[in-house]
Image (cartoon, rainbow, N blue to C red):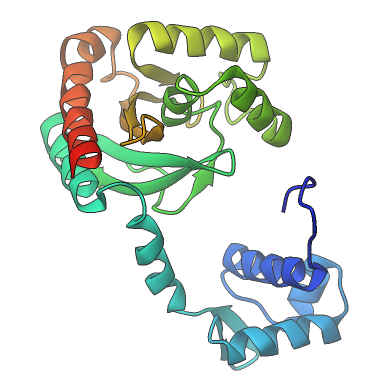
Length: 254
């Protein structure tokens, strides 16, 4: 929770930390969770017992894991982003056309959230997954969305999350990011040149919603040796733009 919240409930915060830690550890017991969270085992046990009763966790022997209830919650949540079925279809089409990895992501709480992903026949495996959150400044998806935001919004995101380095080429200073945002606004697309994953280059374009606010961004990623600037300018930008147009039209006029 943000520090500017009017009121917070510590018990709810602890429950959220328990769930986050169970996900990170891929399941854990009471003792391990208490050590990770630096709280009493009795408190951890009480939270787990409540979460189990509410069916948000499952106990297997002495180990607790997240329940399948999150599948239902996740399906509901992603369908709140525009016309999800159209987005998914265009992501699949673009992956088939480019042969690369294609993502659609949106911004929530100042981070990129991957909504859907598809892999073409030549795609390289990446660590991205649906639901994963990452920083805006080090991804083409994020920079494409930042380019459509006000300076005040950008400043708030950076102040909250910082600009940590993901690779040796990640831009970690505000002036450098400002320059890239300005270039993105001028060109209409953003580039991540190995800034999020070493050796992987990505190009992305923003997607605008019905109220002309940022709905998200669409990207294509591949090895730097294949993602040359001439290919980006002569082929990929036009392909991405076509898919962006389909998503925007369906989102604005459905």
